[in-house]
Length: 404
Length: 79
Image (tube, rainbow over all chains, first blue to last red; front, side, top):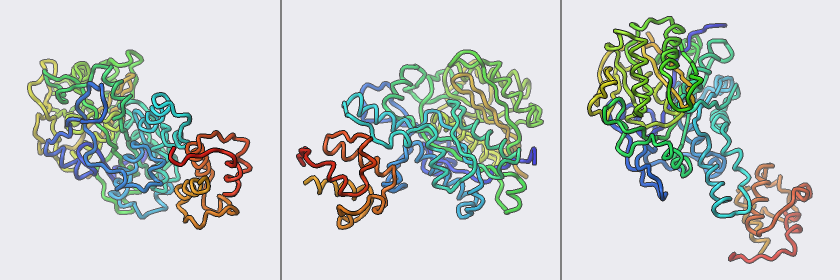
């Protein structure tokens, strides 16, 4: 049962680029950015830009009763999970879903619920909290919600590693399938960070841009927050073949490290080790890699560190890599970003189209790779990596192959 | 007035009809789960600006039990 091949058979995405996977991929391949003026009814926020889900009406997606227990981040997780399961052709297969796992990552959990309650208690001096505050806002709520809405009765939990949460959740699902614990895993991440307290807190970190997100550029000025959920259906190859599923890609390895250092400053050695371990785990050499979906936050320190790590690990081959940051289009959706980015990587391999780094002006002198500026590139690629390097020095790299 | 407000709260949580909310009927018969019941107690506390102690909860089985517990409180509908 060990070391079974793991393939991707379903995808679901809700993001600033739109309500579903088609909107997401069309946005990426046409180089459309979802970053726009926030226009939130909140005073005293420096942050002026974000990639919020456009035209989202929760009542169009859930009943009043369902909404009573669904924080916004759980709503997004359920919508993306339903789409991924439908995409995998499993919506009606209750037996397969029953035995599946649901591993969801999140960087911030049910903040809408928590903050609304705190506002009522601290600011409005209300006497009592609503009794559904805990089950609705708890960090694990998204896993419970996905499990309940899809009838998943296997292992289910939420894990958190800040901006790498999605990657770690996907890796956890991959390992469960490899080891034979489950045949199918619904994995990914969700985050909905547009709340007063979180926006003020991100303001305080002074890493947010009020220009736009320009990864790897000389005039880059920081990240732009996004929201959304990215969910993938992972499956053992034999299980997928047996039921005749369409297979997008194969996940062939991963590298996970932690810096054990500064809480926000990435350590180039920790990043390099994650890349090297992913290559080794996947039995790949640097020259096998065609494309890297970068962490690419557009902060000064991240982009320089990530570029240095890629150069040092890949040597001369670094110049042959396409390295793009799709955060320039869907924003930095915290934990959900790394899941959305693995979906972008999956579709890049599947369709032979490398999504660009948009808003690109002039490359920073310390950022000397091919960032595929502003326009997607048609290119048949076979092997790709997806990088996630989170606050707290938590690094995860996933290696993926085109399926043939 | 109190009965009307209690009925309204129960209807909103149980999604039942007004005529189903009779004093003798048990809350569970209206489809209220334990979580629904806690939500109902919250709504009652909010509506009547009262505190319902945990010790009272086991004695609240029927709609009538709620009304009995609310006897004597003052309630201004417009508040």
